[in-house]
Picture: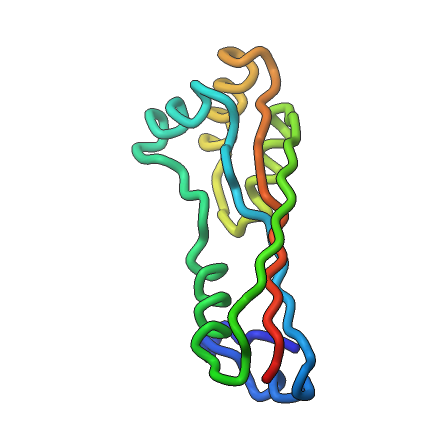
Length: 134
């Protein structure tokens, strides 16, 4: 099964799931970028709060929710925390599709290393969205 972002919806490949089959979407959702005052410092330095949800994720959900071939999602969550040093935090942040520059990275390093003692604890939910094919 696949979702095609170019067509903003469930493609004909979703039709390959037989009636009674399932479509699973899995990703992490950010609960907290880090303990206070980290999120406030990010907002101050970058001019706004950092997003915790992303449009492409919400779009994937909507396309299946609007597809009459699927039942409502069953949602399962597992919360986890990761304590990250500045370099790891920057590397993990880049996996969300943002292409930040060296100045951005220096600011994050400064906040984590100089103001927060070298680490920040990021809280996330691993989320499974499961929809049964009618």
